[in-house]
Length: 271
Figure 1 (tube, rainbow, N blue to C red):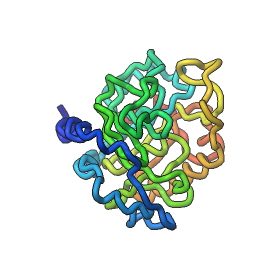
Figure 2: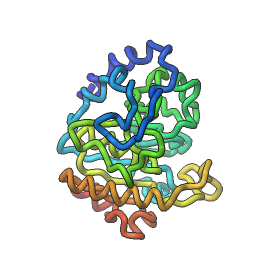
Figure 3: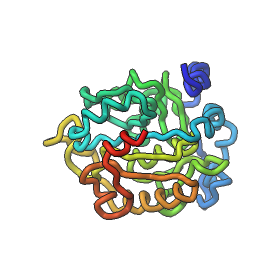
Figure 4: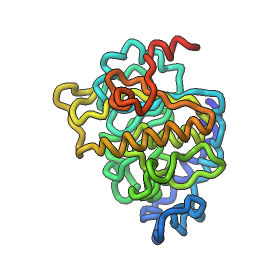
């Protein structure tokens, strides 16, 4: 059991026990512009998850891989088999891809749709039962069994305007980056990772790793918002002394010059 797991093992049971917290966490939002005031969310201090404090900067000097679920992953399967020795973050419905050749270190949901009963349950299609850790990034407390909660800001708080968080000494509710890999990258920074690599994020409307021809996102993507958020994320990660690199072949973030591109084979061969 590694440090992260040992810190969290008792918290999983502890935080899941109280199902009375199935309500919206933030009863008051007023001029949401101050991160030090939790964007105006007055009641967060009382229920801020302790596990976040325990994992702050525990992985300094390590790198991680942030996965979307785009069809480009199908062309990287042989390389992805090497991810068993890496820190991997997956998101949302990627468990539908049964051929994924590694066990995620952290699986996240970053959208409200998967959360049922105000966080008492996570929809089965969004779950990843065998992931080492599972984190719901949401703006109300998530008490689903086996899940940890990371506060998220309402969607009018966005990385492109309000900054990319995690590398500072204080973690407010996470702004949305409009793309799950980028949103959860802020959690990775908070944990100490400074080399962040994005995969499976073509930013196309059609195609998923589990259905290249017919897989389709449930709602239209906010492509321009994602690109603007990625640009802000890249600059803020650089300020933190780190790097945010796209390893998605044909990915729009690298084609348009928002993120630098590296071949995954080159990244994995650098150790």
